[in-house]
Image 1: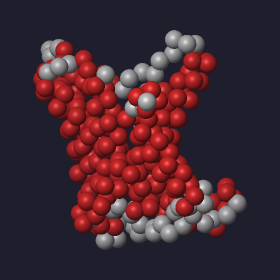
Image 2: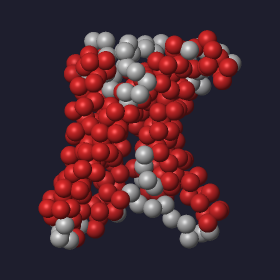
Image 3: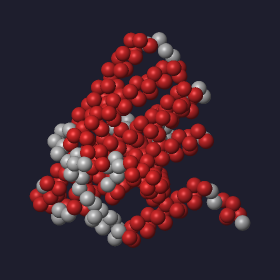
Length: 292
């Protein structure tokens, strides 16, 4: 009875994730066969194309911030942070529009070839729960290891810094900043980052590796299979996704999450699946922060 009382919902979620991950390992021969049937996304994107929306994203934020500073430079407190997040929102929405336009132009079957097929939304939404649950123990392990090595290197006073958006949502009780932060974190950021890093960067990298399978990949890995190209593209795009986040203490967990997102995209062929996983992860982080 005492043992049962010590079991929490978190423990059950972690256990369920371990079972699902173990099942995935057995089913895919430790992951070696996981992406053997992954279908390439046909496109005619030049190698530099993913940099275009990335540059527009940062340029739009910089321009909007400059205008906002001139018009509302005297704002203080939550109003100033609300303006910052509103500027971030405008920059991200601008980049999303550009990405959708470029995807329609450069992907065979246009947005469906890009992975945005509305017919798969319901299936991808429920599959996202399973995917996130499966990778949750790995994300937790990455956080624990980060804390362990952080304390080992910098002493027992080491603490992982809280994400800036999560910090703001606990600092302010006003609804406007909270609602905007939640919308950006749960809806807009997952849309932009998955379209950019999975849809554009990962696809471009995989297309390049597929085209040079017999030379480059064979020299690096010893063979040039389709699955190897997929995993290498996932790892590189996950590294880029991780590097844009300022807090280095979060990098190990974010890289693990990025691999999960990239795998979901390659396995399903749908961009909605990593978008939903990303959105659910951010939503869980917000809920956990507010509960604390």
